[in-house]
Amino acid sequence: MRIQIAEGLPLVELRLGHGGRVVQVKRVLIDTGSGSTVISSLRAREIGVVAEPQDPIRTIRGVGGMEVVFVKRVDYLQVDRRRFKNFEIELSPLDYGIGINGILGLDFLIATRAVVDLKHLELRFGRATKEI
Image (cartoon, rainbow, N blue to C red):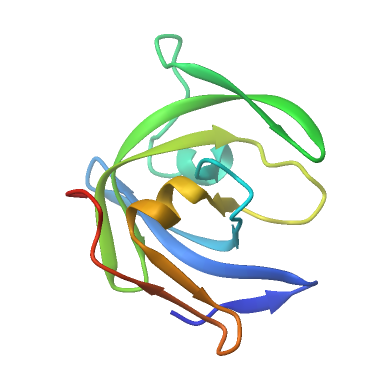
C-alpha cells in the first residue's frame, strides 16, 4: 500500500467493518510510537460503533498528554487488500490539531508483521503472527 506524506506525516487509508456496515477512514497516521490502534469516534459512529457504559476504558499517554479512550472490537480492519478480523481498536475524538482520523499503532504493525518502507513509501505486510 502506498504511504502518503502530508504535512510531514505518514498517512494511509483503511476500511473499518462492523455489523455489516463499512466506513472508509482516510488520513490514518502510521505511528510506531503508539502502542495501540485508535480510530476517530466520529468515523466509527458512522457504522454504529459507539462507546457504551460496559466497554473497557484505558488511559493513553503521548507527547501531547493523556486521554481516556474506550476499547471496542470490530469485525474487521482492512488496509489495502488485507483484511484483519476481530480487531481491537480504541475510540477517541483524536482532536490533536493535526487532522487525522486514526492511528495505526504498534499492536497492528506487529500483529501483521508490517514493513514500513520509507524509501519507497510503501506499507507491506508479512504473514500474520496470529489468526486475525
